[in-house]
Length: 153
Length: 153
DNA sequence: CTGTGTTGCTTGCGGGTGCAACTAATCATA
DNA sequence: TATGATTAGTTGCACCCGCAAGCAACACAG
Image 1 (cartoon, helix red, strand yellow):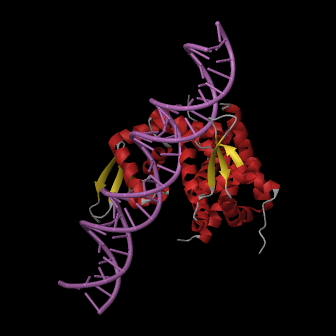
Image 2 (cartoon, rainbow over the protein chains, first blue to last red):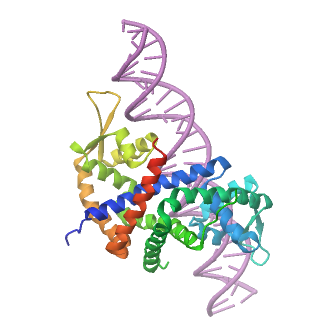
Image 3 (cartoon, protein in one colour):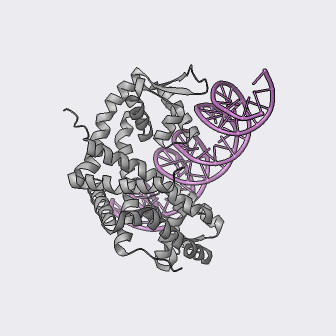
């Protein structure tokens, strides 16, 4: 079958997206860097601080963060070294390892969350306006929905 | 000053975006993988095939690909090894190195472009529809514009 | 022409990540 | 209970990438 190439509009939209994502992530990382953590670390803090008893099983956390098991192991290594997270074994299933937010980790979260929120607001939400934010959610809601439907895993 | 937290809509839009991007890129990579190249390699082929005389200076290519100089050096190493690109020195300025698309590279491009286009169409453009594609372009156009305005570099 | 600053590219190094292999623990089934 | 399959987590390995340093070539002021 003949390939149906991209129209100009499609081309522009897609390239705009691809190139923006790179720069956007770089800016968000840069805003967090002075506080000694990367976006990946921040997301760990977010998930753990929202979790019941401030702890999650490694495998659940890996799923939430879209990380491979090994990736999460090393990320936690770093955060344990920083004192933000502790590992704790589980009584009811001795295979599982809890990732538990420490008091220092919570403090870091409280310190950094406003910074990151302000960063996202500055670089994304404010430029987009309410209407743009709604479009953003709509667009990626549809993409995500379609991805999950075709890859139930 | 008090932090202005995200509203529910903002929260949802943002998280939807962050989580979708990861999965989306993974799917696009996966569609390309059977052909022996990654998205990064594909983008090199795209830029070179569109360039005059099928060649670009390393520094220009690095800028186009949003890669650091060292990152591009190694990416090209791989593509030279695969026979898709050749390095050629420049007569008028012996500092610069041309990255030149080979016949094999062009053939690979012709083989893979329809695959990637179909992949993007399947996972993004079709689910979004014309209206969604326009929104995508509009949203990231605004984000990109704002980023470039605040970071002239 | 000479010295200084700039530009283009490569290399050494360290950090982050996924895959495959491995261990340990649990579950399922005979 | 015993065996095989499954699940949780870690480790070895390889790859990708950016930063800093280094080298070579160019640009320009004096």
